[in-house]
Amino acid sequence: MSNQNKMIRPLSRGLHGDVAIPGDKSISHRSIMLSSLADTEVHITNFLHAQDCLSTAKCFAALGADINFLTDTELTVKGHGLHGLHEAAGILDAGNSGTTLRLMLGLMAAQPFLTTFTGDASLSQRPMGRVIKPLTAMGARIYGREQNTKLPITVVPAAGKLQGTCYHSPVASAQVKSALLLAGLYAEGATTVVEPYVSRNHTERMLAAFGVTPECEGTAVTVRPVQSLIAPAEIEVPGDISSAAYWLVAGSIIPGSRLCLHNVGVNETRTGILEVLSNMGASLELRNQRESCGEAAADIVVTASRLHGVTFGGSIMPRLIDEVPIIAVAAMLADGDTVINDAGELRVKETDRLQAIHDEFNKIAPGSVEIDGDTMVIHGGRPCHAAEVSSYDDHRMAMSLAILGAATAGAEIQNGDCVNISYPEFYDTLARLAD
Ligand code: S3P
Image 1 (tube, helix red, strand yellow):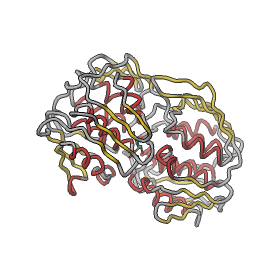
Image 2: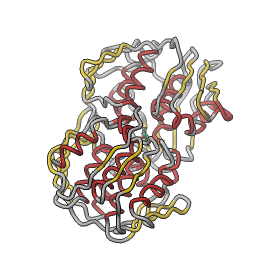
Image 3: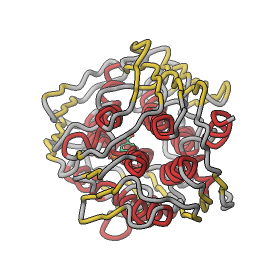
Image 4: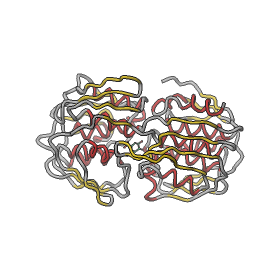
């Protein structure tokens, strides 16, 4: 990854045009994982060709799945059945990707061979105890640094079959839930995960597409062991609302803008940002609502409008967890204060995003952001000036800072190339829409 600064100029004339939203990151990961556990070929389209999902593809290729890219975003995957993975020749590198590592820990816990994982500097700092602890309680044998909580991590075969469990997770996390559900496919008896709030349900939906329908009741999800997965012939990945989020906000806050975002995934466990922006006064119109492979999608037209501050937290947080940095940008340009409660999970993302928003946004508009524990308060409408800011190598911080700079007085973003983790075309698209 190059560490060049990215220069963002102020865009006073607004953004215009159409954006084909790149494939959903969460669904792209899962499409490779589940296809690798079936035994018929799956043709995947609109796959997210970005570093995180390529990490998953490399890991599963190393475990024996036949993965062939036809183009950047189209591939076929053929596994060798639920018990058809084999030991990798080397160490698996999850790169920057928490989803790759946490979901694979669940899967590897049930395999009769050894797997060792590494990752980049950010992933090496992130907490893995939240999946390793409940997996260990199911009988998994997983070892890592700092009392089995940090990379590098080695998974060795369990003494016998994993035991199903009923796990009450202290955090609403799709990664924790998914890791346990994937392990549960191989366990003895049912595996239930109960969350404080419902998190994204792409694993449940994709399992259903592979012939295993989890039982969902409130915030509890249960899977039972199966002998095999039955793969669909095709998976069309909808666009990622987390990537659309940058244009939803840019189109709202840069006067004169009007954008049409095509093929946005609007699964209800992901649409918190649409509710918050609408409550702030954004003009969003959903068109052409449809369903593809069990996932809802729509086109969204966004037109610039005056925003005002709002307060949110609680059950909506898992439904917009990755969008908090860009929602904070909307709040910076809104009238009045925005209060974001229950934002503690942001501290364990690719960087401590609460601290990063506080430190970097205040360089652009001093005194705008205050944090108190898990609460962030943003005072909208403060004077902004051009500043050099850090992305902390976090793709979502880089893109949020770029939109903040574009909407105000410009910005110079350190290590801006980290957008390649989830949205390699981001800067090119920004330049095209501003033309
Ligand atoms: C993801 C779940 C979320 C999210 C991450 C992707 C997934 O993480 O922040 O970007 O694909 O399951 P948590 O489960 O840790 O909240």
